[in-house]
Length: 289
Image 1 (cartoon, rainbow, N blue to C red):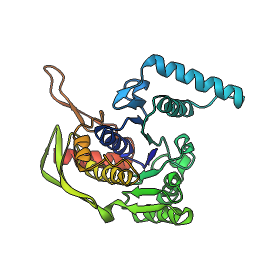
Image 2 (spheres, rainbow, N blue to C red):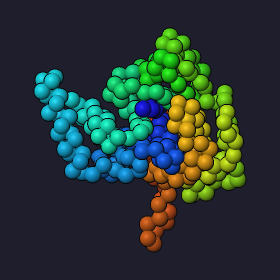
Image 3 (spheres, rainbow, N blue to C red):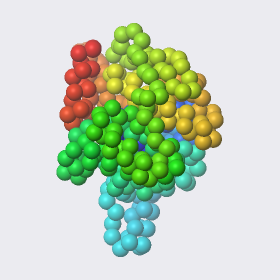
Image 4 (cartoon, helix red, strand yellow):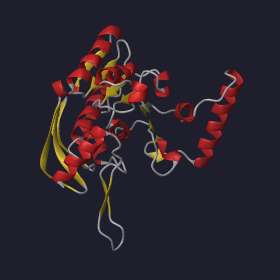
């Protein structure tokens, strides 16, 4: 089980890591939120969304169990999270990658037992629930780390970084800072359909063509690659350099700086930026188009 938290980029990072594991030949579950078109897309195995019938029956099982054991109904997000875990278990996935919904410490996904925790950059979002400062939000995100387990963070804001390090030290997590051990540099000019990066990690150096737009996706790629290498050290040895590069090249993540071309119309750029950091990233990406 791998958990991915952060303010922005956690969905892309989770999708990249899951794609790498699938390409390596591992049966891989991916749980993300929110959905863009249908709720089924939140739950995937090897890139394929759960069927409507299977999701309905699994949700019914979760709700009935909660009513019987707890005496009350779980929330919508709790229900879907439990449904994803149950479906993945029934389908014998070898790796489950879960995107945290909000925060981390108190998120439903944190009821699992991850062997790897990834944290993307921290920004101001959901302050009513997570706290008014980067330090408080960082501590909430850091709640997904586990004692004596691998944790990798791509966080450069000093206030958030210090808070995450403090939590790691307190619980004894094996925290590594992505920018300290990996490098990512763009190669050539990006297009509407993707970009190429030179990626350097402790285990590999080479070029990766990514069908995702935006310079920020380079950081998500590097974080996912570092996560894949950590999982390889834990026993998923087929998560090698080839799987990392090929998996990244096959990743699709709609609605994130995605170009669409309606018949007979001008191209349209779709993006789901919804907070200050996301809006800034969108602005910088528009400058480079």
